[in-house]
Image (cartoon, rainbow, N blue to C red; front, side, top):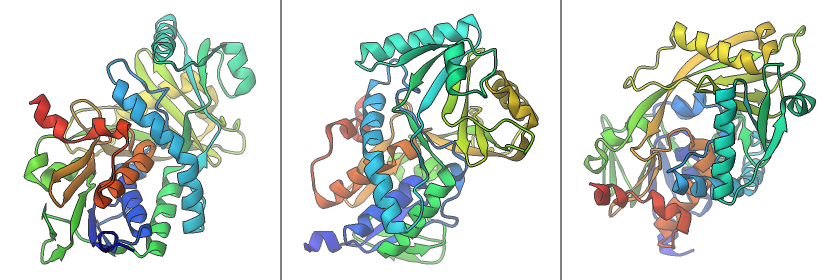
Length: 371
């Protein structure tokens, strides 16, 4: 093994991005220290777990669509390796996604999405409401049309996080349950000590900008409330596929879990507020019931809020901040989707390898160019 592959790396942030990166670096032979006061918490624990670059595509975000599509293509191998090295389920659900609409305005939005995807060389299947209900009997009569996106998958985020931690431990990652105050080349400063290393990877989500002056004001928190529902014995079973779409212009999604659903998500620019509001819960349930009326019989088992780490152009920051310091943050709603390509890119940068063409769009150097 080369000397470069034995260099010590400190990863700051124990969400899906930090955990994936730490695991892959350790698997390559690096001594890795993971620094986080509560690993597998924060936005990653609250997430819906969608792997949906096509269903979430948006005009003007072509680089994000391509990056997401490449990472989604990595997920089957990533999941298989994760299961093998952790001895646990990866949490991957291969059933696909339905994007549905209710009123004429929402259905027009689906038409626009289909046309945009066609312009990018990506086709989706259009279906009537009746056809959709044959595929997913839990869909209600208000659903009049939709798109089938079989390539867009999902994961059970908490199952995946458990597997990532187990794989990281098995690969030799050392966990330090502490909060980082600042980072610099070769060091991470904690409250009462300093961790020394050759490379630092900042993967602290919405808090990444607090750790290095080069990241200040590049990442902002976007609050998202989410609900967890359990199907009771008297209720219809949940859909097998992810169900998502607009309701009066608001995006809502229902992501399958074992005997239940995750429903999300609101979106607010309110700083670091993570309290769940009555209005948020009411809106999510009302919108979700338009798609799947049977959830009225489900049990509401959890309501929570997380902070999406967002950038100005919704692309993440993956690359060098300065020599010896890398950033892997700012993934907005796509942390789980982009985990494979992010970890692969960071490992390649540490080894001095070429970066995949699609990942070059996430280089933090673009921020200086924009300014």
